[in-house]
Length: 211
Image (cartoon, rainbow, N blue to C red; front, side):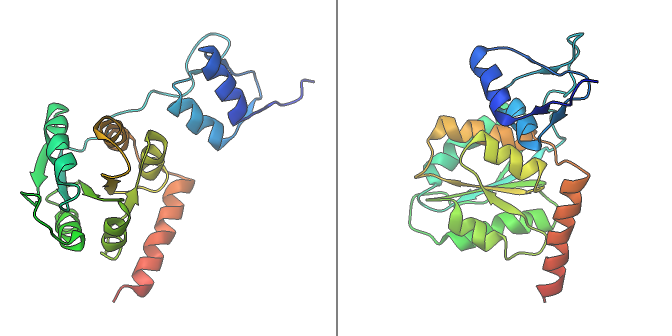
């Protein structure tokens, strides 16, 4: 009897470097990390027949996005808005509308309120590092904000953590990287099962301490 093979992240990376699909054998066990890397590196997981076993990333039906920044993130916000509209999203610009100094918690709050009242489905907030805004947003009931700096963290934030707000650091990433991060976040689909159960535990903590 054939011994079960454990498919690891290294095996997926090797396939990616070789530019090949990865063929799964009967009985193979694949780690969660290997699956994530296959998606990130665009490595198809195939059976002997060549049939794909994991679907391509699907677009989720998000159409309304609230976006804001502080003064440091203003230019990046201004450049991302036409990119978002070109992808077919409806964008609500929550400010600011100049590079005059402002306080990021005020604009993070404006994005969070749009999610809370359901006038937007996803939020994007930009400050210098993407961290302070995430801290402010995560004080708001029902908000799951994630600071992301690459496609992997963006997809993971949506798929595994069901984040509804993406925060970006304008001093950390440039426009092209920001575009790829935003697109990865918006097209990733929150996954059910064990991930949904863990997010529910986050919600339970929120309910316990939110007064």
